[in-house]
Length: 201
Image (cartoon, rainbow, N blue to C red; front, side):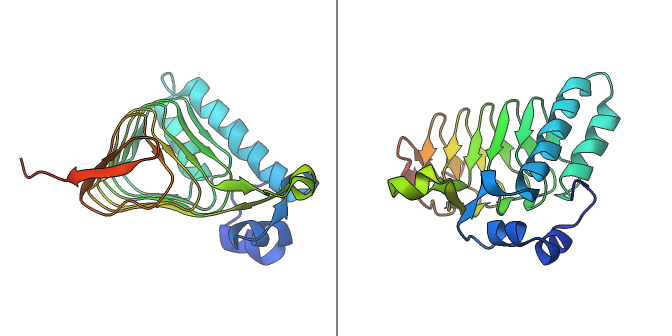
């Protein structure tokens, strides 16, 4: 496998493990040949981006867009950025991502346009099996995360598997988002809860 140039559709068509990952099925990551290869490529590319970002910004941007084919135009980010996969990630136009951004796991992650992602924010897509024997055997599955347009994350926000956050909402610093958040609200806390609608300044 190995090539960052492979489209997600091509990978899904020819590789059963990739197909299962993006289909939300149970997988054994450590027993796969292809999935660790994809994460190695993504993680090593991120390491290179982080290393050269300030000295070679144009090359860092090129590497980022090669790694994340679903990235839009005008995206502004600060290193370090750490991704397990580039495929399956969509980032809308003009979104800003501050330093220490982390996405753990595969499957689909969608971040809308015009979002503001504070420092040290994390998105997690995988859940390990709850039953002890299956967990020991390495079974896990990914659940998609969707973030709407014009969403603002304060610093150190954590988003857990399967969550959808509606457009125009604000997630307060330090929040752990365990369930869906509607559009147009301020939500904070661990677990994150809606506290009020967005005010019209």
